[in-house]
Length: 267
Image 1: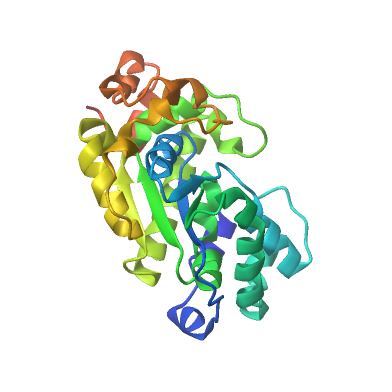
Image 2: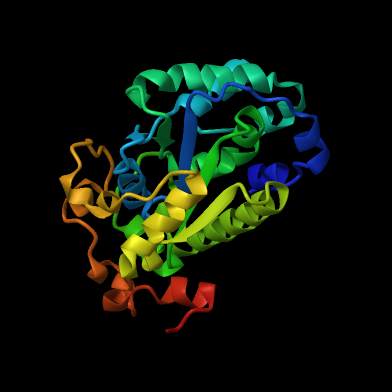
């Protein structure tokens, strides 16, 4: 929790003072959100565009943070990195990231980075890469929580094994995302998983417009993509966009009661 509190101390003055890269030959699209919120599906849709290369989950930006801070951590960011942030060379950080992503871009103009927990790093990324786009994937918290409980993660998601710990983490995540929206207005697009399932074409059009891309109908044909999927969602995305993926928690309503009550959701 202290990490999130420190991140929320990020100020408009810092944003104004930072000088990121002016390289514009490659535009990164960061797909962020809670784990199991639908980030893989969203990346498949965006990556279905002819001008976009889908790079999947990369640790390229956390690597730049490690280089800038002289620290190594298995987490995407830690409190010491946040403390050091004012002294970082954001231009070098941005250029280092782009250099590390060019081979993944396959000479396309846009490249996605779908590391969900990069939502914690939006402040660093936005300052280092002023032209980067952020797509924030939102999903019903109980469905997200159920999916977390059913997935065996590594140490990356220690909150995912207990319903009340998940709720605490979810609230911290929501508060941090609200802070980033206030700090970087217009740079983050919220995309709701349920809306994508209900109207995939409409959602794809909104995402394409936000990224500065012309809409292509083939974006929603995700099962045709040849891009590999190396996440827990690999089987699901091969099935295409299915409308029966929402409100899955209702089959476990009684078992999910602690989470439902903590979130104040009974329906």
